[in-house]
Image 1 (cartoon, rainbow, N blue to C red):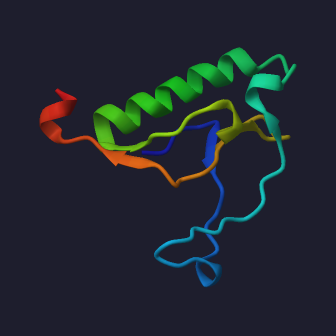
Image 2 (cartoon, rainbow, N blue to C red; image 1 turned 120 degrees about the horizontal axis):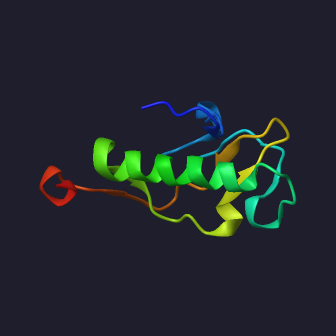
Amino acid sequence: AHLKGIMAAKVVPELSTDCVLTTQWVDGEKLAESAAPDVRALCTTLLNAYLTQLLETGFLHADPHPGNLIRTPDGRICVLDYGLMTEVSEEQRW
């Protein structure tokens, strides 16, 4: 599923292995520290993204602390650090 206003850093395959995921650098500020007027709307976008992960795809970023959520200069949320992911079975979703 694709949600407007949210992104993930692009993976750099040639620098990644089975144990290390290397992504491109993403400029931004911590969402929790941003004074931008759209932060409240971005939090709604983030909530929708997590509900989509949980209820639709069943594959969930499981480490959404403030250090892993940044607001990009173009006003999107970038979710960082995919070291902790989880799968939610169809039975658990409904």
